Amino acid sequence: MKTTTKLNILATASGVLALLVGISAVLLCTYAYTKARMPHNEQGNYFDGLTVHHAGSEYVYGVVGLSFGVFALVAGIGAFRLFKRAAAARRGRNAEADGSQG
Image (cartoon, rainbow, N blue to C red; front, side):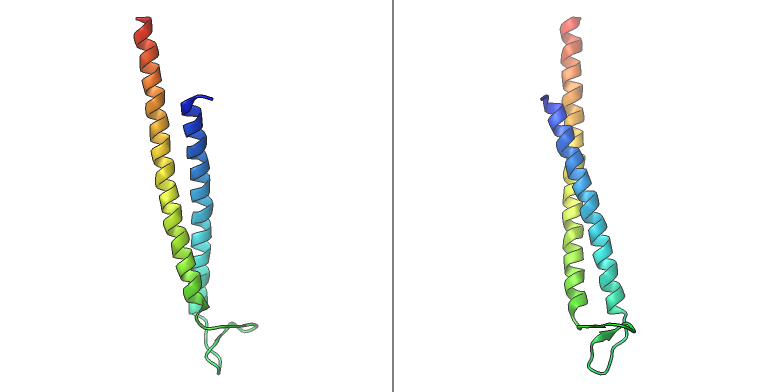
């Protein structure tokens, strides 16, 4: 397999990973924010009308969501750099092919 094809596959995989982890990060942070805004019951736990949630879990969800966000950002930057490397390798190979013919 050619180098540009490998780079494109890696860049696409990294981009898909960044997208999936980014969506997970948004969902986790939204859930943590929603839990943090719930009213408290007599014991100090969060109560949404049906279920009693333990206090403090929104912080864990928030930290995990933010960690996922950082990981998605790193994966996205990596995908962008891999796409740039694949494009540069493609241009370099095309320039060599054009130079050898002329």
